[in-house]
Image 1 (cartoon, one colour):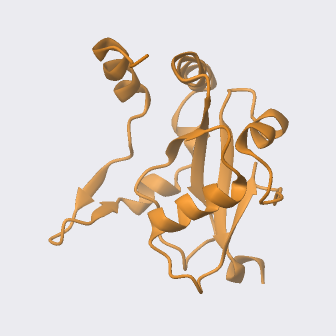
Image 2: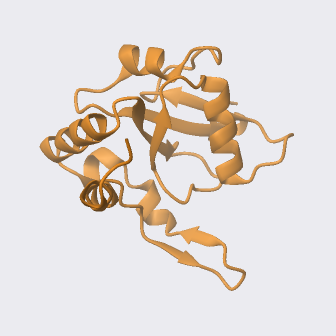
Image 3: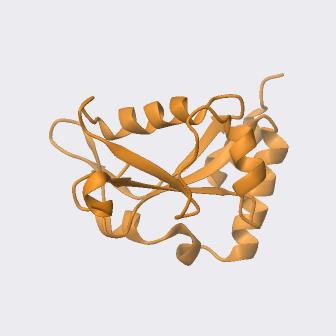
Amino acid sequence: MAPSPETNDRLGDILMQLPAKKDSEGEIKVKEKEQLKVYTSKKPFVSRREEAAAIRNIFPTKIPIIVERFHKETSLPCLDKSKFLVPQEITMSQFVTIIRNRMKLSSNQAFYLLVNNRSMLSLSKTLIEVYREHKEEDGFLYVTYASQEVFG
């Protein structure tokens, strides 16, 4: 069943993106200072919990994920958005590919995804497995990305 126009409007409000500008070539450029603010510090817990619950009610087979750049990261670009709504059956490997494509990285550029800023997970795990094990109390799964240089 397709979402109603009201649902689409509500989802648009729920999944607002960070402020972004297009450069002369039409590329979206995120204001890096905005992206570097941790999502949890920009939005109160109750608001985040309501947002995640609304997303899961509208899209029960999707996982709400917040993806942010590691605070000490300098070599990887910022993403054009931090909120992702991803099918629960995809693997971490497939999610890595999605993030890699969003950053427009070449195949020889390495990066790591950390869940809750501390755990590197098996790439064969599905996102529903990761979500069940690592979701925060507000209902979001928090993922941080960083390059090898950050870890030495």
